[in-house]
Image (cartoon, rainbow, N blue to C red; front, side):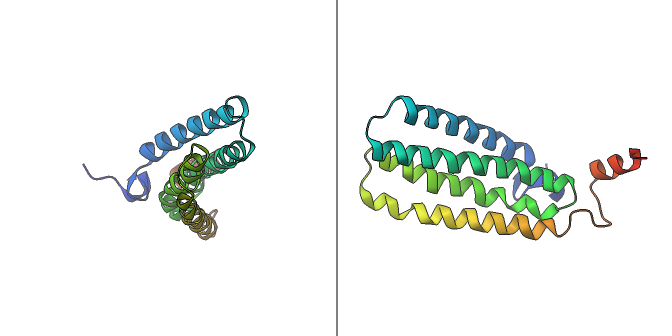
Length: 147
């Protein structure tokens, strides 16, 4: 079954991106708690906390992408395809370093950061369409109810 382009964020249905974002948020909280309560090494603790912060930020950015779409910024559907893989590369490499991975794994971290930046540029680009004449059904219904 094919999905209408507006129903998904990029190549997958929106519910898949939202489910992945929710699982990413869960992981970010779990790693943050582990960093606070389960790690003694200050460098490893810092890597875990930084990874968890960036993972959580980009989890919220994925949810924001759906909100952008509801307000007419349909190009936002492409941002999660950069935010979530960016989380895997950026945060995942920091988590791996904290758990003893070789230092060359740190070369992966900036690639994740680059994906984050692309995602944010896509959101900025999509914001140009918010509140234009072409509105999503949800936004249009809301505006019709406002006196």
